[in-house]
Every structure is written in C-alpha cells, then in structure tokens.
Image 1: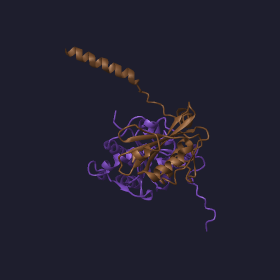
Image 2: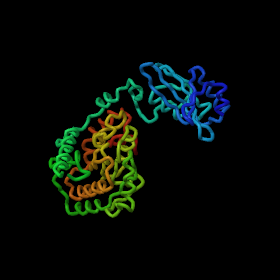
Image 3: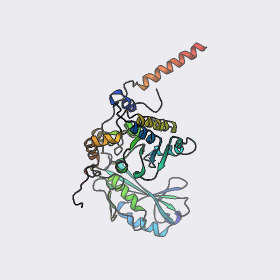
Image 4: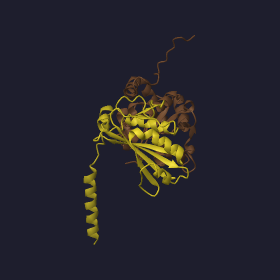
Length: 176
Length: 203
C-alpha cells in the first residue's frame, strides 16, 4: 500500500514500521482525503503538536495506522503560531473530535468545523493555553498557590549524602 | 520517627490543637461505637487509589477494624483523598464531601495532598488539600504502604474515641468562609452551594 502512495507523495521511511510525509498547509485536506479513501491507513492514532516558538510555528503530526496494525504513517505540516487555524478532520476520521478538542485546550489551535471546542480537562481556565511555551508554569504556580514551609529538622540532601559516604568509606578502611 | 506520620501530622498532633474533651458517658459510648464502624466512600483520586484494594481485601483485611467500603457519599463516614487533586477532581471531591452526613472525616493519602508532591510545579494540581477542605489525618508517603493507611485509620479511631481534636466537619462549618474563599480563588464563582440553605419559595 505504501508503494501505491509513493507514486503520489514523497514518502520518507523513518523506521521499519514508520513512514513520513511532509506536506504544505494548503494541501492538507486534499492529502488526507486521498489517503483515507485510497489506502488502508484507516485509523487516526493521534495528533501531536510541537511548539517552535523561535520559528513562530506549530508542527502538527497526524499519525495514521493501517488496517493490519503494522505500519504507521506520519503526516507532518506546519502552521503559523499566531492565529493558528486549520480545518478539522472530522469528515474523514470521526475520532479526531476529542484529539482536536484536547489540542485546542492545550495549545489554542482553532480547528475550523469542530463543534466541541469548549472546556475539556481544564475547567474555567482563564490564562493562555498552558502547553504554549510562553506560558510560565512556575510563575503561575507561585502566584496561585502557597507552598508549605519545610520541616524544621530538614537537612540538605547533598551535604547529608556526602557525610554518609565519607562515614561509609571510613568504616570500610577501618575494617581493612 | 514513625513511618507515615510526619510533617503536617506533627502539627495536627501538637498540643495547641488539643481541646478538652467534654463527652458525657453516653457520648463516649456513642463515639466508641462510631470508631468501630467506619464506612469509607469507595472513591479514588489519583494513583493512591491503587493502595486501597489490598487494604480492603484479604491481604491486609482492614474490615477487622470495622472499616467497610460503601458506594455513595450519603452512606459514607470517611472520605479518602488518595493522591493528587486536579482542579476538576477537587470540584468533585468537595461535592462528594458536602453530600456526606455528619459526622464525617477525611484522610489525605500521599505527599501530593500535603505539598503537591511530584506535581509541585503543575499548573492544574492543588498543592495543599487542607486549604480547600478540612483534613483529619495526613498519611505521608509516595505511595504510602497499606500499613501506613491502616495506621492512619487506627489514629483516626483514637481521635474519634477520645475527642481530643476538633473534627474536620466542625472546622468546615466554623471556618466555612475561609474554605469557600480558597475554593472561589481557583474555581471562580462556579462553586458548590454553601451550607446556608435558601428556604425562599418553600411551603
């Protein structure tokens, strides 16, 4: 099946079971509809997103699995970070619904045509989406929560371990 | 140092928090019965729930102490918060807690309920459970062994029998504003109704 797809696309083999196609954003729907109807890659396993904040890009990876469950096909495309919009895959793969909802919540990507883009795991989230790299988790946590003071008999781990090792060494030498 | 009872449990056990027991003989008897029959809500948050099946089944068999699992919050006396609470989970935990009949007690299991544990820098996990709901017993560890949980139950039985500490549900009524303010801080105004019932429109 990969051979027949190779006539149309430039497929790179990453592994025994993993193949990759890099496409432009404009050809996204065309490619996916072609693959879903003309090949046996029938399952959308997952959609992953990588945040390239320096290049101002999101990289989306649509990972498809074939009918025999022995080959995976990655379809990679890049979308701009600001006003990140892309068409939904609901027409070809209904299981994309929940994955797109998750990506919308975590990265703020808008999937045009998906009706379920509301709160998922984070309820009443008012900040920017938390997996975008400009979101400072530590600053948010320090502002939102008050940490408990440590125990009064708290000791520095590094110093303690050093002491213990020295003690063990001394005992070992004394035995000799 | 006893395993399973360090850090905040020390503060709870401090003499400052002790109150003078004013039980009558009948109350003492009732509390004794109460301590011997504790119904635990079969509810688990986070990974700590995996320690509860061995505790309740034949390996550790906590039923010999009178601790039984029940299905709904309305029948339960004890809520075990077993591990980390995300915002979404905490809302459900508080809802379950408020549905329980008094007297009710909370056991917090694991480091995550004490100071966030390994989720200390997570954006949607609470760090200190006792800010949002009162806790009677903290069992420390990541994860605590079932023995530590059983020790927690024994300690709680002791607390119930002797009434030396103010029970959590009394604190929840007295300091309700404190807990509600903390809950409002992370949930916004989208929180559970308070204890003040609105009787308008009745009759």
